[in-house]
Image 1 (cartoon, rainbow, N blue to C red):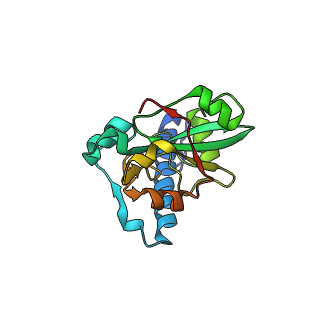
Image 2 (spheres, rainbow, N blue to C red):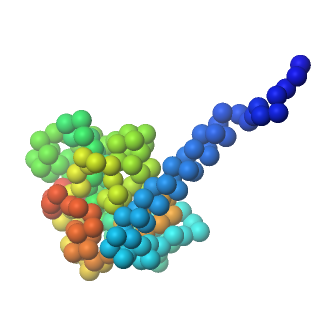
Length: 180
């Protein structure tokens, strides 16, 4: 049997891995481009280690976990909605339902990447897809600065609360957190 010169016999999962890596690189580049318009792209920190969880991000940044501004993604009326909250906060389902008039339903990892534009571990409120609303939780107001991700699972940026409010394009402040 003759094999053509341009044929590739790599298993399909190799292409999925490369595609996922390319998508994650594109997401952080989108965030860098977004911050460039404000002259802030140099404030983005990239790590040699993962910052995909609150604990990992706090270790990478040598800060307390509560100062990690985690971005949680939800589905409301068929649309993606992001809530940026302090790292030590859990969502209070009763408060959430009062605020958004629906039960809290988190996006799946696939939905987050498709609807928001960032993969889980790097979800952030910057350079998100059109139509995604961003809310900031009151729990963040305890801190002078916080560290949200920047589109990848090994990045962050230190922002003051007014900067976070400005650059996230926040639709407003909500009080849906508990445990802090």
